[in-house]
Structure formats: C-alpha cells, structure tokens
Length: 312
Image (tube, rainbow, N blue to C red; front, side):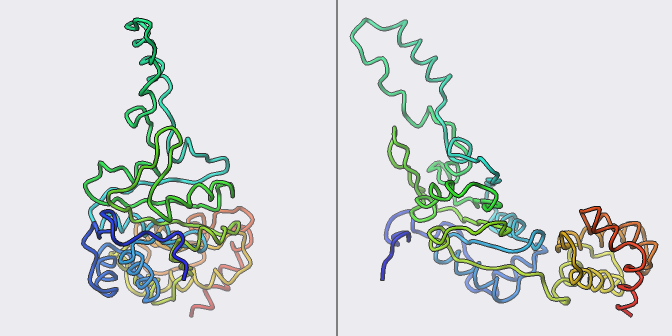
C-alpha cells in the first residue's frame, strides 16, 4: 500500500507533542466541558486525527461548528491557535512567507558601506532571520515548545492552485523555500481545514487528511448545545427555540440558519426575558436567524404563525 503523503512515524517530529485523551469518550468529555458537543462519529474522527497526527478536513453548511472546533481544541490543549482565513487570490506570500525586502536592502547598503571591494556583499541575505513568517510557516516554526492548532478556514474560497502548495505541508509537515531549503516542524501542528463546499476540493488534498462531514445536529443535540451556551434560558423555551429553527431549515431559503444562529437567537431571547415564543417576538428577532432580506420577507407574517403552530 502506498504511503505517499503520510508522515513517517519514526522521526523526532512524529512524537505525540500533546497529551491526547486516551479515548474518544474522554475527548468528547473534554470538548463538552468547553461547550462543544460532538456525536460519536465526529468524536472518532477528531480522536483518530490527533492520535495519527493527520490533518482533519471538515465539510458542512455554514454555522455547524467547523471553525469553532479548532478554537475549542486549542483551548483543550492550552496551545496557540493559528488561523489562515482563505479567500480568492490568496497566495504563498500571504499564507506562508515572504522575504523582508526592506530589511535585506538595508543589509546590502550596510555591507556596501563596509565593503573593501572583495565581493560577497549579497551572501547570507536569504536566511531565516530575513523571513516574514505567515500562518502556515508559523505553524511549523521550530521555535514552538509545543504543537499549535493550525486552522485553514474556508479552503473552498481560495483558488484551486493554492491547494497544490498545501500538499507538502499536509503530507510532511514541512515547507520548502527555494532560496533557503526545507523547514520541518519539530512539533507537528494539529491541522483543521474547513470547507463550506462552494466548490469541490481536489482528491490529492483530501487523501492527506481524515475527512468528516458535519451535518446539522439532531434536536436533542442542538438543545444540549443551547443549554450549555445559554444556561439561563428556561428549558421549555430552549426546546421551542431549537424546534422552531429545525423546522425553519426545512423551508426553501437562500441560507439556512446554522447552530451559531440558534445560539445567538437563544441568547437574544434570554436577554429579552421572554417566557415563550409568539409571532411578534419571532418577527422582531428574525435578523438573528436569517441573513437575507428575501428570506426574512418570506418567513415573516403568516409563515411564522404556521411554523409556531407546527410546534404545538
């Protein structure tokens, strides 16, 4: 079986750099203690990614908790979170490194003033001290005393060509710089990549990762998420909120509300001190759930009353 793209287990960087929980159940408990609820399948994917030291590639609709998972993992392991937000036009100089040309020029000028004409004025200008380290290179910086969490967020927003550059990093936890050589992680970062699937990501990148699709949670799981994030809300109101959002997701909307919107809405209703949902309250707070004007116009009014009636 081919092992292309997989890290070798017998070098210094392959040591488990952090205290990974002994089981997926223990990992799920650690995440839950910080308000992040996972089902068995996601707990298994995260646990294996940590144990096998492989990048974790998460796909799913916006607002289901992909980005939040990376933040919570950084909290669980008490380590640094390094985030690379992807966007169209992202390139190596913004994502990984670029040379500090002003500093190199100053160095050249200083050498020129001292030069005796014997040459060699440009030697040593391409060394690590002249690098401006961007998120990807920061994540494998040998100066780290422990593994950071590297979040490559919304990879589908970047150009397809950018994926090719990531293959070396995701496969070998290293980056090759033509003028300098190959820089390799001393502590392999915990890598989480996310995608909202606005376009397909190439198989070559996915093969280097453990893949998991995060779907909208079940009613009971979403109720538990809201319970932990908004503890002051009455239980019957909490359940009505989640049931309404889950019913709303079955409508033909431009953008369905995610779990993040459910939590925001629940927090707003808690601030308002509401003891139940009614059409006036829902209509006045729809902007916390829906982010498109057309969606709000479609839902507001008769449909709100119908959705509330469906919950009875």
